[in-house]
Length: 316
Image (tube, rainbow, N blue to C red; front, side, top):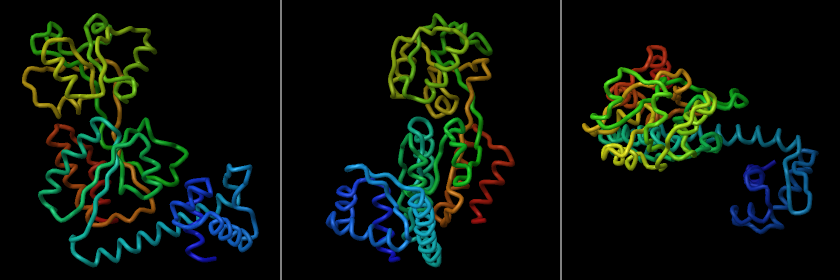
C-alpha cells in the first residue's frame, strides 16, 4: 500500500466521482481507476459500490477512510510540531465562525492579534458548515453555538462553552418602551420590527419561540445586514430583537436596549476543535487575546471556561 494510493483514495472519497477526482489529482481517470483497483486487491475488499456513474463507500471503505484520515492528520501534526522548533515567522491562524456576530467578534479580536504578531497569516472563514471545515483540517478551531453542535461527532470534537447571552429589544432612546426595566415578547407584538432574515440564527431562535408561544410580531423589514438594522432603528423606523453581543459591538449613542424576559431567548457560544488537532503557537497565542476581547465587550467568562482555554493556550 503506497501513500500515493491513499491520497487518490481520499480524494475519491471526497468527490465520489472518478472523473472529478482525477481532475483534482491531475491524473487520468483510467490511472485513478487502476490505482483504486490495486488498492482494493491489496486490502482484499471492495472500497466503493459502483452503480453506474455513482459511487459510495462500502463498509470496508469507511474503515480505510477513517484510518487514512488519522494518518494524514498525524502527518500534518508532525509538520506543525517540527515548525514549532522555529520562531513565529511563518505561522498561520485559521478560524471558522458562523456567519453574523461570531464572525464579527472573531474578526475584530484579530486586530489586536495582528498588532502583536504581524508576521502571522490570518484567515477567518465564515460558514454554516464548520464541522466539514474542521474535519478537512481547513481551520484550527471554530466559533459556533451549542445548538449547532452535533452529538454524533462527540468522539471527534471538543467543545468549550464560552458564554450564554440573552436577547435584547433595541430601539431609539426616546422609544416609550425604554421606560421599562425589562420586556416580555407580548409587549412587542405591535412594535414595528426590523429583523434579520429567517436564514440568520438569531431569527431562527426568535421564530421558534414565538411559534411555541403562539405570538405574532409586526416585522416590517428583513435584512442580513446588522448595519442596516441599526441604521433603520436609529432613524426611528422601529425596533429590533438581537443577541446582546451584537448590541455591545455597535457604537451608537442614539440606541438603548432592554432585556426580554424569556428563557428560550438565550444561546451559548462555544469554541470547537478536533481532539486530535495539534495547536501550534500561532493558535495558542490567540487564546488570551480572545478572552481579553470578550471581557472588553462586557462578556465575562466563567473561571472554568478560562481554565479550559488557558489549558489549550499552554499546549496541554
